Amino acid sequence: MAKRSVETYLNSIKICRGFLSSRGKDILTIDRAAIQGYIEYLRLERKVSLKTVKMHLTALSTLYEFLVFEGRADSNPVLQVRRRYSRRYKDGSEAQTKQLISVEDMARLINSTMGIRDKAVITLLAKTGIRRNELITLDTSDVDLIENRIKLKATGKRTNRVVFFDDEAALLLRRWLKIREGMNRRNETALFLSNWGYRISRTDVYEAVTKAAARVGLHDPGSERLEDHFGPHCCRHWYCTHLFRAGMRREYIKELRGDSRKEAFDLYNHIDLKELKEAYLAAIPQLGI
Image (cartoon, rainbow, N blue to C red):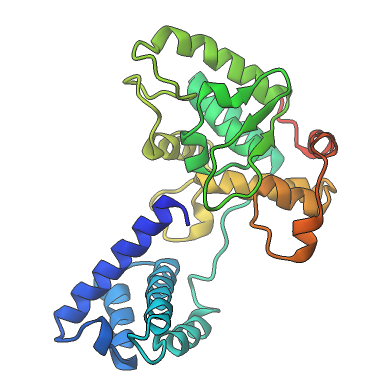
């Protein structure tokens, strides 16, 4: 698992342990009623979303799988509660999807962004479909402006490490790199720098995307509806959807997304990078940047 995922799971277990302790229970004496009470605590007191509740239950269930394997518990009490809870809320008010914007709206969002760094950040997210953390960890040495490709850092979530970008993204990257030279007084290796000269942060990326989206009416931070928000991960959603709509083969999209290879077909279906790049360039939307 990715380091951030491990940290999230550990934090979730600590929250659960604190809840149980306040009620005279612990991890090894938990029962169905305690788990249901924990769900109510998360929803009513901590006021977390359905997605976050599911994450907490997944972390707890994973812990119990380990305890059963180690002989410290007889069974996993989370499984039945999690299945019932998921069915109960499957068609609830939070069953919403991330906002998907049109090619024209993405062009408006990017072209309305004046700062060259933020413009390059949003364009790279949209043109490559990489995750926010993958973008943050990029170094200048990872970018090949001759072949228009990027080699990503290895993570627990990604199988392939090579993604491509087109001439529109290349133009912005070249413009950003010229500006970066004048502000890199700390000799940072990071591709994208903060205003203080350090590696760009998760918050920097989030604000770059959401402020640009809000400026053109695509992001409403005050709304409780998921589809009224447009953040960095929506760029990945946009990327995959519009590649599919342009006719790209499903296995090519899976390869570019970096989905884990679980089926035998995925393990033995070796994709030629030249063919993949040609398919990408034929399908990626042009935004008039």
